[in-house]
Length: 104
Length: 166
Image (cartoon, rainbow over the protein chains, first blue to last red):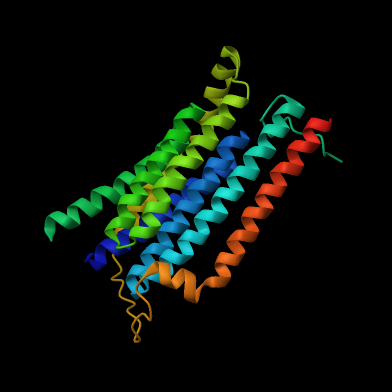
């Protein structure tokens, strides 16, 4: 059984992961690093769902939702990395400042 | 109880540090490894919060499969030249140097508040087995998962076929 104070620390950790992920997405110019930032956001969401399930006593339901989240996460990452590889083949770079094919 | 709480706190701090390292490190490969490490530490926390089934999924899929996908993508894209790396390093340092400070301030600030969380709902959980919840109560989720997987498969097939045609 986890201490209630520690559960609050879990929420604090999730918020810190969210900030790290958002900071990365907003300030990076590399597409792969942006995807890693999104992954960190998903990790924070997973932690929040599991902690919420534990606090409310709905651990099984929280696990079922997290399993669905993991499936969505994998499919998203596979398609997104496919797009990243395609963009690299087309433009020879992953720097978002240089990807201006759709401009205008 | 005291040792257990200390252990939990160490795992929580390790999780945040792993996430921070993932973003702060220069090399993309190290970033991918950092992400795998974050997933592995999250798995330990999930085990400690009684979510064994989801923890196994997290460890095998997120820590294993997604890291492989990231490392494959990084190896398929060309690395930067030495001069580009040096220029990129300076630029990156300017942009990311405030992140550890921001994380520290938010972490210490929120930890000082110390809210006692206790949201036990009045009715007990109907089903305590996650597998039964997934099959009996959340069966539409499974249908959604199949639809998402098929969308991903067809998306990748169409995308790479278009690339080959060009």
